[in-house]
Length: 110
Image (cartoon, rainbow, N blue to C red; front, side, top):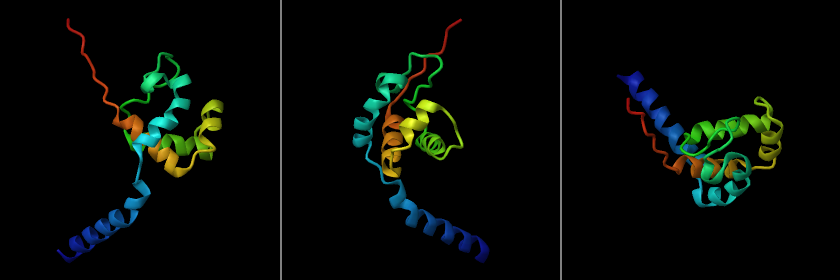
Protein backbone atom coordinates (compact mmCIF):
# COMPACT_ATOMS: atom_id res chain seq x y z
CA UNK A 1 0.00 0.00 0.00
CA UNK A 2 2.84 2.42 0.87
CA UNK A 3 4.55 1.65 -2.43
CA UNK A 4 1.36 2.31 -4.41
CA UNK A 5 0.76 5.58 -2.58
CA UNK A 6 4.35 6.68 -3.23
CA UNK A 7 4.10 5.91 -6.95
CA UNK A 8 0.74 7.70 -7.15
CA UNK A 9 2.20 10.77 -5.39
CA UNK A 10 5.12 10.92 -7.81
CA UNK A 11 2.75 10.58 -10.76
CA UNK A 12 0.47 13.38 -9.53
CA UNK A 13 3.47 15.64 -8.84
CA UNK A 14 4.87 14.98 -12.32
CA UNK A 15 1.57 15.92 -13.92
CA UNK A 16 1.24 19.02 -11.76
CA UNK A 17 4.72 20.34 -12.50
CA UNK A 18 4.61 19.53 -16.22
CA UNK A 19 1.20 21.14 -16.83
CA UNK A 20 2.63 24.52 -17.96
CA UNK A 21 4.57 22.70 -20.70
CA UNK A 22 1.22 21.68 -22.21
CA UNK A 23 -0.42 25.10 -22.06
CA UNK A 24 -1.67 25.71 -25.58
CA UNK A 25 -3.48 28.33 -27.59
CA UNK A 26 -5.53 26.66 -30.32
CA UNK A 27 -6.59 30.06 -31.64
CA UNK A 28 -2.94 30.92 -32.29
CA UNK A 29 -2.54 27.45 -33.81
CA UNK A 30 -5.33 28.29 -36.25
CA UNK A 31 -3.42 31.39 -37.36
CA UNK A 32 -0.15 29.45 -37.69
CA UNK A 33 -1.91 26.69 -39.64
CA UNK A 34 -2.46 28.98 -42.63
CA UNK A 35 1.12 28.12 -43.69
CA UNK A 36 0.26 24.42 -43.50
CA UNK A 37 -2.74 24.63 -45.82
CA UNK A 38 -0.66 24.76 -49.02
CA UNK A 39 0.31 21.11 -48.55
CA UNK A 40 -2.04 19.72 -45.88
CA UNK A 41 -5.18 21.33 -47.29
CA UNK A 42 -7.72 23.78 -45.98
CA UNK A 43 -8.52 23.00 -42.35
CA UNK A 44 -5.99 20.16 -42.37
CA UNK A 45 -7.83 17.94 -44.87
CA UNK A 46 -5.31 16.99 -47.55
CA UNK A 47 -6.34 16.42 -51.16
CA UNK A 48 -2.89 15.00 -52.03
CA UNK A 49 -2.57 11.25 -51.36
CA UNK A 50 1.12 11.72 -50.54
CA UNK A 51 0.45 14.37 -47.86
CA UNK A 52 -1.32 13.35 -44.65
CA UNK A 53 -4.40 15.07 -43.31
CA UNK A 54 -3.71 16.70 -39.95
CA UNK A 55 -7.30 17.39 -38.88
CA UNK A 56 -8.43 15.21 -36.01
CA UNK A 57 -5.00 13.69 -35.32
CA UNK A 58 -4.10 13.36 -31.62
CA UNK A 59 -2.20 16.38 -30.29
CA UNK A 60 0.56 14.23 -28.79
CA UNK A 61 1.17 12.57 -32.17
CA UNK A 62 1.29 15.92 -33.99
CA UNK A 63 3.62 17.42 -31.39
CA UNK A 64 5.97 14.44 -31.56
CA UNK A 65 6.02 14.46 -35.37
CA UNK A 66 6.90 18.16 -35.50
CA UNK A 67 9.61 17.76 -32.86
CA UNK A 68 11.02 14.81 -34.82
CA UNK A 69 11.20 16.95 -37.98
CA UNK A 70 12.97 19.67 -35.98
CA UNK A 71 15.59 17.38 -34.47
CA UNK A 72 16.19 15.34 -37.64
CA UNK A 73 14.93 11.98 -36.39
CA UNK A 74 12.19 12.23 -39.03
CA UNK A 75 13.12 13.50 -42.47
CA UNK A 76 11.24 15.42 -45.11
CA UNK A 77 12.86 18.43 -46.77
CA UNK A 78 9.72 20.57 -46.73
CA UNK A 79 8.58 19.62 -43.24
CA UNK A 80 12.02 20.12 -41.75
CA UNK A 81 12.17 23.59 -43.30
CA UNK A 82 8.71 24.45 -41.91
CA UNK A 83 9.33 22.95 -38.46
CA UNK A 84 12.81 24.37 -37.75
CA UNK A 85 11.75 27.94 -36.87
CA UNK A 86 8.78 26.90 -34.70
CA UNK A 87 8.97 27.31 -30.93
CA UNK A 88 7.70 24.60 -28.57
CA UNK A 89 4.68 26.83 -27.92
CA UNK A 90 4.02 27.16 -31.66
CA UNK A 91 4.14 23.38 -32.04
CA UNK A 92 1.78 22.94 -29.10
CA UNK A 93 -0.60 25.53 -30.53
CA UNK A 94 -0.62 23.87 -33.96
CA UNK A 95 -1.19 20.46 -32.40
CA UNK A 96 -4.05 21.85 -30.31
CA UNK A 97 -5.69 23.41 -33.37
CA UNK A 98 -5.48 20.40 -35.66
CA UNK A 99 -6.50 17.94 -32.92
CA UNK A 100 -9.55 20.08 -32.09
CA UNK A 101 -10.96 19.69 -35.60
CA UNK A 102 -13.68 17.06 -35.56
CA UNK A 103 -13.52 14.57 -38.41
CA UNK A 104 -16.41 12.26 -39.14
CA UNK A 105 -16.19 8.91 -40.81
CA UNK A 106 -18.85 7.35 -42.95
CA UNK A 107 -18.66 3.59 -43.28
CA UNK A 108 -19.62 2.05 -46.62
CA UNK A 109 -22.88 0.20 -46.87
CA UNK A 110 -22.86 -3.12 -48.65
